[in-house]
Image 1 (cartoon, rainbow, N blue to C red):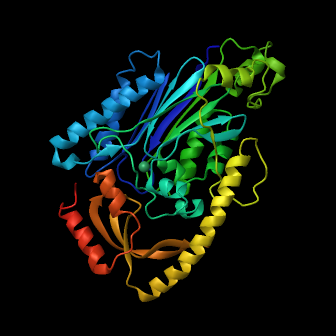
Image 2: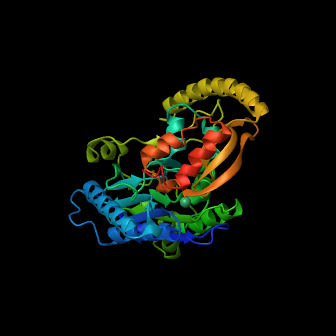
Image 3: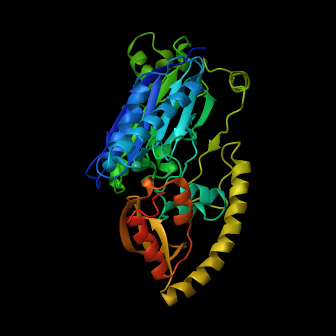
Amino acid sequence: MMLRVAEQYAATDTGRQRRANEDSLLARSPLFVVADGMGGAQAGEVASRLAVDVFEEGLGDTAEPESGLAERAGAANARIHELSHSNAEQAGMGTTLTAVYVAPAEVAIAHVGDSRAYRLRAGELTRLTDDHSLVDELMRQGKITPEEAVDHPQRSVITRALGPEPSVEVDTRTYSARPGDVYLLCSDGLTTMLSEEQVAELLRSHARLHDAGEALIAAANEAGGRDNITVVLFRLEDPSAPAGALAPETAERAALSPAGPDGLAAGEAIPEGDGKGAPDPGELEGVLVPSAPVHRPVQPRRPRPAAAPGSPGEGRRRRRLRRLVGVTVALVVLGSIAAGAYLAAQSVYFIGTNARGLVTLYRGVPYQLPGGVKLYRSDYVSGVSAATLSPVRRGTLLDHSLHSQAKASSLIRSLELGQLSE
Ligand code: MN
């Protein structure tokens, strides 16, 4: 079966609080890319643009889309890294990368950083990428809860990017595709402003991808628009499928002709995934994807312990999550008691990053009490972007260690003087 991109939408928006847009995108079927750049001056813009340019040159031999994407990602990394050494203003610049290539019956993804790819299938939104962020790693290690992650001071620190290092580890995966699948690529300016439930709802409630995309960007702006927002959407269809499997947009047009399928009114959505032309799911999942991809069901932003037993396959993850939440809640309660004591002493500091990714000295402890009471506040914002630090340095400097004011200040001071830059 040959699937093709039947409809697409791509846009980037500066948001409400940034002056420049450092995101870049490419939407040239069958290749779709989102890159979110970071670094001082206009370096972020340069880095994300460069990444997209390298993909624009094409994949070469696409017999193996995954390795083709990985090769391009490596080339982009090398080019950004090289350029960052030729210009002091661009030192340490980097970019996230989420690239998707549509093969006849699958989609291949290459991914670095905290931009994301999602798939909406039969109304269910599934995240296809893992964030390479400090917060995600802490969450995976059970050190913080998903609730804490939402407003964590180090939320914008990413642990992998194209550019900062001579080489980079790129995640690649291939997912089987089905007619009616909608794919979303986005920068964190969308997902830090909207919960995944909100994203899913906006996608479900707009039949045309253009309307859905505009609604997503508008909603992220209404929620504050703290960062650049990039949204790329595309829908796959089987051109040879019988009319019953047509996409809503196609159905709209078809309904105007006497031969229209099932007499659908304009704008009436056809349930995805159960059209007459839909393939047997088992056939697709089993045969076309040799190594079964890890499907990661969407976590609600603030998961309720007694989440409704919704779609199949979520059960195991939810049970694991619940156990994790239970353990971490206990730890956090204990931690909060200690934190209260620390705060009373007013003598504890830690180093993190602020919403703009700058290394920041925080007074207090890196916890947030239920109800959103933060046990820390920003004390001093350095001029150093966390993206310019090596992963090792990021790991040790931003590891939540509590310091005295003198120790923390001297760490930040030497960082600013460049003594810790490598
Ligand atoms: Mn961003």
